[in-house]
Every structure is written in structure tokens, then in C-alpha cells.
Length: 549
Ligand code: NAP
View (tube, rainbow, N blue to C red):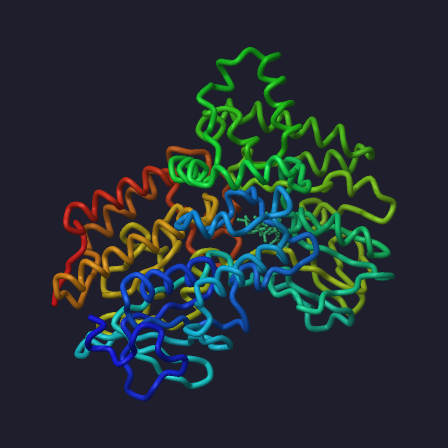
């Protein structure tokens, strides 16, 4: 394959006119970086990354809001493909903050010498399959044209900011920002009355930090949310030693678990456990903190009654922490099962409402009517604000893909094929879009996991498939229609076996974006199971795909 390419391994940074690359990769976060490394350095192919930002990092490049921190524990938030690489990096805290994750990704990019094959400040606008040439034609916002045999999207799951369409925003005389597009120079809230809209994982992280500097913070809550303390702290020398000395073992565990985290869900049932013992286990999990709380019992995510024991425990904690009973009641008035929406973890979120300079507005009782020049007006009153923070999330999983005009065979737009919701095979390929692979798109376990784990699996699987094609002289790979239909059914069945679809307003369902089809987007069958399925498909000569020359 590379023999027909004018680019030798990593030979050029600038595209030359007429050059045909083996692969173009869109995005330079965890996924794009590793995909470049695999194709360029392992297969010796001519590959380049196109990246809209000025640096590597993806999510961690853009999400610089106060308090931005990873919810996965640092010793598991890393690449696993190289033990040497994993040992060469030392995290400082239990959960890495955004600046540290960005430093890590730059460290990896430099160590693997990736940046010379990444074109920064290059936003892809469209990609079109050229049937005659069997190539992807890619155009960028700056008018560049590129051609490549394979196109791989590594655009992240949560990179298309959702700025709600609230009337009057343009009239606001203060400053407004979205957490996912945070200014690099930071925002100084000192002396300001700040309004924060949104109480998802992001809002729960940033409210305590904003409250520390702002004159006043008003949190506008539409849906109350569970949260468990993160219990972040600097790592002890002993733990650092453990993480360094057990790299391989930790990676093995991450690969074997349902969510790619370095711990297994407990085997026991919440319902079968006597109430006092159950309470003690929840108490211990609360004291330990983090996403592991969800793993306290094996049936929390599948049995509503079991789930209620966890939900009630957290509601009681909220009432115990928040001193004002009216505020506590609003915060604890949660309408969905625990973890049916992505469960946040926090550093002092509920405690923040005990501060004199923080207030909660319940938008269920008084919906926002409009934004005025002076602030936010609800059905009850106008809240005077100097700044508004939108912690309102993203057009998850499909937003960034559909923002590009991707067209497959017969000039068919991806948006047409996905009009009623995304459809693909293994989350990786869409029928009618040959040689286009998606990393952690819809239909992948993606956002239900510790992200580096599905990313590495997808990248390695795609690399294996491309290597097989090279070795057998094939130029084209495409998911078969019946395989795609069967996978869509599997994704739906996997979701239905959990309580996840019960959070009808969750972004997992696409429900946060007006007009977006309501389907459960990620594959909820578990990362370990997904890996087995993908391995089986590859072992069965890429069953469900057509490979042709
Ligand atoms: P999110 O979970 O979608 O939460 C958005 C919040 O904004 C929700 O409270 C939502 O209310 C509210 N909202 C949206 N539109 C609104 C409107 N028009 N009016 C009032 N409220 C509105 O977004 P996120 O918090 O940014 O998190 C997204 C995902 O990013 C997470 O689920 C997680 O996967 C990832 N994340 C990870 C980390 C981490 O690892 N550290 C941190 C942050 C985020 P409703 O619930 O009523 O829709």
C-alpha cells in the first residue's frame, strides 16, 4: 500500500499537490495521536492528522473551565500499549486536572514524534468518497484539499458545544462563555455576579471553583443530579510506586472490565444484602469516593429496586450536607435512576450551596423565559448577572461527525443515512462509506468507559484491518447492510437490558439537542464483551465487512 504513496514514513509535514496519503485522521486527541502512531510507525504508512486546534489534546485542549478534571483515576487514564511509555509518566493527583492531562498528551506526542505529521489549525469541512479513484477527498476551512485511501475520524465524543437557543442571548451586556470553549487566558470572575446554567458533570465541577472567586454565583438547575465525592488528593509516593510497578497488571484489569476502569463491579446484589450491611458498604464507598461507588453492587445499573437503594443513599447525603432544607430538597429532587445519566463525581459541589454567595434556582419551578441585557429572566423574576457560564454540554457522539459534510457512495450525506439516528457496524463503519472508520462514535462503548480503553481497542482493530488489507492487496473495506442492521439491534438490546434509557432527558439519548433523534447512542453491553465481538469478527475474516480490490 505505502509503495504507491509518495510519502515515506513521516517524510513530510506539508501536503504536496497530487499526493495521495494512505490515511487521513481527523483530530489529535488520544485517538488521533495513537492512530497516527500505529499507521505511521507500525505499518509504515503515509498518514497525517488534521486538527482544528493549535495543539494536541482534543477534549483537554478545549475544556479549560475552572475545576476541569478527569473523573477516571489517573493511574488508569493513560495509554496502555507501551509499558515503557506508561512508566515514563508520573501523575501527581488521584484525578488529573486538565493542565496535567494536556501536559501528558504533549509528552506522548513529543516522545512519539507525532507533531510533525499533524496539521494544526486545520478544520475539516467536508469529506467525499471518490468512487472512481477509491479515495477520500477532504477539504478544510482554509481551502486545502487532501486525498487519502482511508479516512479515520478521531473527533471525540463531546466536542460540539451545545449553546442553548435561549431568546435574548445576543442582548446580554455581560460576558458569556461555554465550558467547552473556555478562553485560554481564563476568565476573571472576581467581583462579578455569575450565573451558571447546567448541573451535569461539568457544572458540578466548575460551580465550587467559580464560587470561590465570584462575588455571587447563581446556579440554574433544570434537572437535579446525583454526585459522589471524588476525594481527590495528591498521590502518595507509595501509590505512585504501585502504579509504576504494576503497569501491566493495571492495564490487564482495565481491559477486562465492563467500563475500562481499573476495578471490577462487585458480584453481590444490593437487594440480597441485608440493609445494615448495605448501608455500611455504601458508607465505605462514599468515604472512598469516585466512580467506583457505582460498582458497590452488581445490580445497581440493571435493577430499579437495587438502584433505588443507591439513589436513596445519595439523596440522604445531599440532605445531610446542604444546610438550607429548601435548597437541599431541590438538589435531592432527582427524577432518574442513579447513573442512568453519566454519574458525576465532585469536589465540594453540594457543600458549595452552604456558602453565603451561592444560590440555586430550580428551573422546573421557574423556567428561563429569556436572557435580558442585565441577566436571566425566569417566569418568577430577573436575576441580575455580570457573566453567564453555560455548562450545558455537547451534541454528543454525532454532533462533530455531522458538522462535517461527509458524503459516501453516490454523494449520499451521512446526515441522510443517520436521519432517524446513527446506524453503523460495531460503531466503526457505515454501509455506503467505504474505508471510513470512526473511533468511539455512536454504537461504540465509548462514553460509557474510561476513554483511553475503547480508543486503544478501536485504533488497534482498525490498524489490524488495514494491515490485513495491505497484506492481501485489498483497497476497499465496507460494512455490509445486514451487519449494520444487526449491530443497531444489538446496541438497542444492550441499552434495554440496563436502566440507562430511563433517563429520558440524557445526552446518551440525544435528548439534550432539540430535534435530535431519540435513540440510545453508545453500546451498553460492556467494553470487555465488545472487545470479544470485534476480535471474533476479525478472526472470522472480517465477518460483516466486504473487503475488495
Ligand atoms: P451534560 O451532562 O449534558 O449537562 C448539561 C447540563 O446543562 C444539564 O444539567 C442540562 O440540564 C443543562 N442544560 C442544557 N441545556 C439547558 C437549557 N437550555 N436550559 C437549562 N439547562 C440546560 O453536559 P456536561 O456536564 O458538559 O457533561 C457532558 C459529558 O462530558 C459528561 O456526561 C461526561 O461524559 C463528560 N465530562 C467528563 C468529565 C470528566 O471526566 N471529568 C467532566 C465533565 C464532563 P438537563 O439535565 O435538564 O438536560
